[in-house]
Length: 323
Image 1 (cartoon, helix red, strand yellow):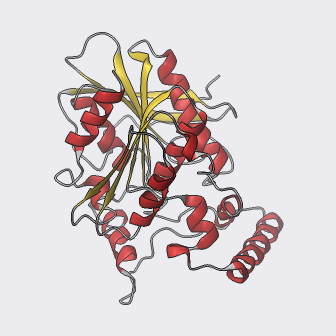
Image 2 (cartoon, rainbow, N blue to C red):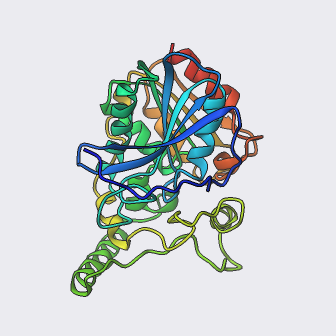
Image 3 (cartoon, one colour):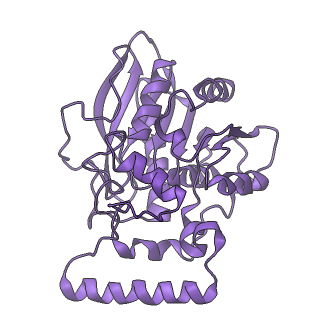
């Protein structure tokens, strides 16, 4: 059912390859018929079926960035991991390109669970997901609907429906939201008339002197050698402008309080986005839910700072709940 995708054969990640971890490219499909490209990581010394984890994010990134780093690191610690590009982005399929959808992108996680449930090297009864930044919210949304997911980690989480509908720090009111809708719908007309889709632009470049800290934080990752990747939307021209429309009236965490499986939310103490995890945690129920605040860390520290990301705690969480 998979279409043929053009996959890079070179190691083009933003992080070094671990010689103790086997790596291969794979393709799977979601229930909308979109083929997704992924990197499968497995500890070379491992035998038999392994607990498996699907990893994705951040929002506007590709699997060669933070999600691949998380996946390879967890594979080195004994897990089978799958870092994938969401629909319409990176090496994955889907037309038109560079579209985001709260429904389809939640489905992407569930489709990764489909693949792992049927993969010979994975234990179908021990599958978890890990979402970074905007895909942290998608991971929680997937866990709310997919009972096959036994453990979820959301790292430096964004709720993309909330930030689109209410703006950063919930500063967008009803009038502001109406004007945003007017602008986006005018762009729809222009796109249709012109036969192409305008792009919203990735992280601003050059960086304005008066840019707020969180914009500087993103620039330091996506626009420098630290995290730049040629296929990353945030590193380049960004999403289609009208992608934001589907997030304006579709809250993804509506049933987060009904998640019965284990959840670990990880966030930096000084991250501008910390409120997303704290508010999500208040919705969760049960003793198998944890909120871990990493001292002094900012938002993108949890993208790639291996001395800051609490991999020991993340590993222990998965080992406990993917028994």
